[in-house]
Length: 263
Image (cartoon, rainbow, N blue to C red; front, side, top):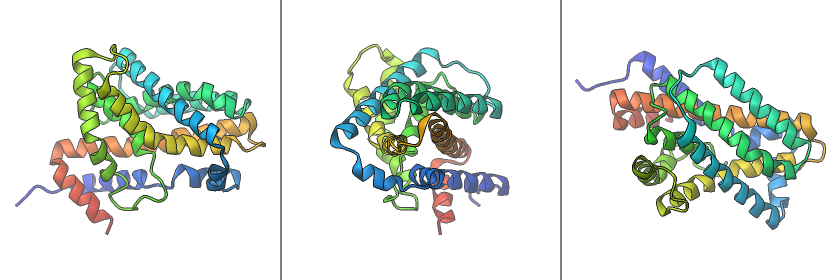
């Protein structure tokens, strides 16, 4: 008889799936502001779109350098997640006071803070935060959380993105384990950042559209960033719970059970 998930672990997988497939950031921001964020996205000028893309890439580059330089092994906790969320909310309040101009300044800071929270979640699920593979998987969360409403609601939202990023994650982890991130512009790292940024940029654009609402201000910026952080914490909780299950049962079985839960 083959290996099967226990009832407890099946419940863990079900919760992870719910966290990975919870409503998009745009939907949650629409509920918060009572305004259609999608409409704001279509009205964003091309120059602003390029600015957001550049800010997204810069934020991920800084986060990767920070991860390699400073992450240390401490046990993650709900308390640390609360501290990280409070810090990101403070960044949002500061950025919200300056509108979209503030986004460019606060995004690298809030991204690094979110990465620390993601790393704490990874530690709580048995990952080694000093491992380049774990670091790259923490950064990969920003891509996994960049699902579009146009994505298929089944496994293509999570497993297809993982599959698409698999090679980039592995190559980046191997490169960093040998050379670190000292070689600026290394093709392997550029490919990885580009792949993550293409999907993280979806969520950052949704955040930018919310920040562009004239009445948002500092208080609104604080709330927008609270939802922003909560979005990626949920994705991280789901992703690293699944990785823990895969270490126990094997990736094929866990993916098969994940698909079965979608039926």
